[in-house]
Image (cartoon, rainbow over all chains, first blue to last red; front, side, top):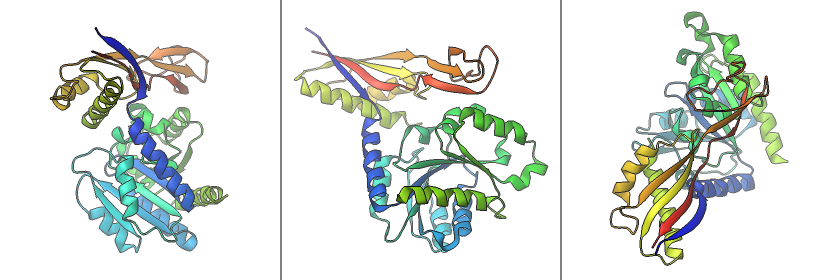
Length: 220
Length: 113
């Protein structure tokens, strides 16, 4: 005698539940967290450091660094004087909410109001796993080519911010900027979109202003 | 590739519901998998055979009810179904499309004895 039991339970529900806990914890402490996504080499760490420099003394930032291996990024962040925790996924292709929840316990959050969670370099897997950040930011870069939103539409649809990095390389790379802008907006009409160069600092001020506005809104 | 932890979640959900029902064995697990969910059923099957060993779900049949990607074109208002490989509007080839459905990924039911 067999019985059919209805279940109707989301398979990523356990992760989503912990992501909700992380978000509540952050909200309670008045911390705005950004899940920073992008391909390997897009410049996620450089953008984070450039953003903190552009914000100057107006925020107190901390960083959670997610990588498959190494502490290279964490050392770069620590060298700038920012509190940082490195997570090595040991082959894992994404961060998930339980891992971030654990990392938050190891991070000194006193006085912090902005948290960057740098995800593993990957345009596919991190999309399915919420880490509990209030905003999702994709760092794309000019050398990756202008067709990436066609190929990884989910990542662009589900993000709040797209930062196109390495615009200083536009004269040297085949990249149709107007077509790219149109495509990003088409996939995500509400997205905040900025073009910048983390290395030179070009374009970072506008993005920093957007963040300050988001921070002010998070406090109210 | 994150099908391994996902498969463990499938197994955990199935085992929990089976235990709550006082079941002896899980014979079948039926899932709803949207075409845009990014889930690869073959990989789940592959890992399931491994992670379900020596549980009451060992040998269970996995059924994947695939749900199409559903889109609406913001330019010409056409509603259509498409795969993730070819999601442009079939009418006007526009890219201004909104996702209406196809990202489902859940355990729908289990069959137990």
